Length: 125
Image (tube, rainbow, N blue to C red; front, side, top):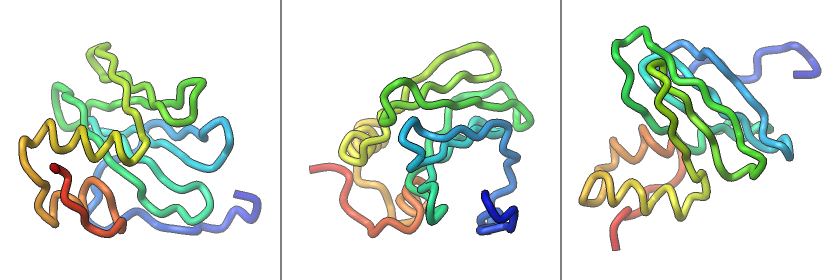
C-alpha cells in the first residue's frame, strides 16, 4: 500500500469483482467481498489467499459485503438480499465447517478453491 505498486494481481480463474475490502483490527489480514457471493480472506503482508467462502446470492452480479467484527477472527457478511452470515476464520473452525457442509473430505480441487496454497488436509476426522 505504501508504494502504490501492484503486489499481486487477480488470481488466475477469478472473474468476480471485489466490492469491499477491509483490514482486520490488527492489520494482519484482509477480507474482500465480491460478486457471486464470494468472500476471500488474505494475509495482508504476503497477499496469500487464506480461505474462501461463498454465500447465496440471487444472481452472478449480486455482491456479498464483508468486514471483520471486533474480534479479528470473525467476519460478518451481508448478502445482497440483506441476509447476514458470520465466518469464524480460525483454520480449525473453517476446516470443521467444510466437513459439515460437504459431509465428506474435500477433493484437492475443492481444497485449493477454498484454502488457496495451504497444503491439503482431510477435512473430516
